Amino acid sequence: MQTQAGRACHWEVDGLVYQGLEWGAPDGLPVLALHGWMDHAGSFAELAPRLTGCHVVALDLSGQGLSSHRAAHATYNIWDDLPQIASILDQLSWDDCVLMGHSRGANIATLFTAAQPQRVRALVALDSLISEPTGKTVVETLRAFIEDTRAVARRPARTFPTRDAYVARRTANGNTAATSEALADRALEQTPQGFKLRGDARMFASSAVKLSLDQAETILASISCPVLNLWATEGIKQRGTGSALLAERAAALMSQYEAQDIPGDHHCHLEPRAAQQMADAVLDFLGRHQLL
Image (cartoon, rainbow, N blue to C red):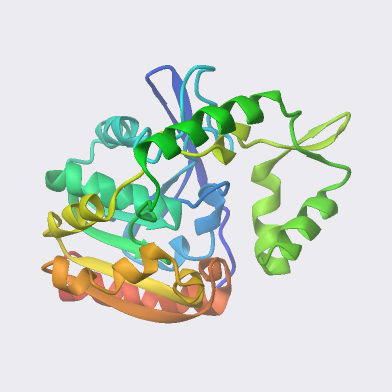
């Protein structure tokens, strides 16, 4: 299957314009897809077309891709998009949906599922599940938030002399060349000074408050809908993070949780072979739960 670019779509919510891409027939099973940190809706271009029978709508979350940056005084905590996600579901006329997220988008999807259970038929989390529980005190976290936010505000916009330089930088940071190429165009804006990152620099700042281990466990335990957690064999689990260790307890905390490993790295949903394996797993999951 060839990657399908997707149909452009957009919504206006709370003074922000959210851009997105959609795949599949409008009468298909509604699936809302949320991308990872500093990625965009195009990160689902391999996976979404393979989800036959589904109407997949992927957002550019605020401050990333083609969507609006938040106001100068606003933040990018992982819960900041939640009210707008609910409003976008309203504008789509979706009473509920399957919620799918990758990495940071999976963490956001998990929070939304816990807070709005009536709007989520099932949760599909790709190479993450919930954000890293903090080992710092709330004072330390707040201090980092203030200092990081002020520091990034003083930095000039990140630019690359050429598109290839951006691709090379992502590849050097661990992405495959194919993934880096696939993400480049929607992540960059061409200017006279070079190719500027569209993403808001405040995305690099520390969050004001982070979940404790108890809070993270409470969130997971509150989710009763079916959950499919797909982990990349060379992704987050191999980093030994607290969020990956917490995911090992998910089966005990969540009533309808299942997990599966997919060969590949953190962005393997952009690789054709892994994307097909993911699609097969998702379609089987949806079928077994009589959602498709």
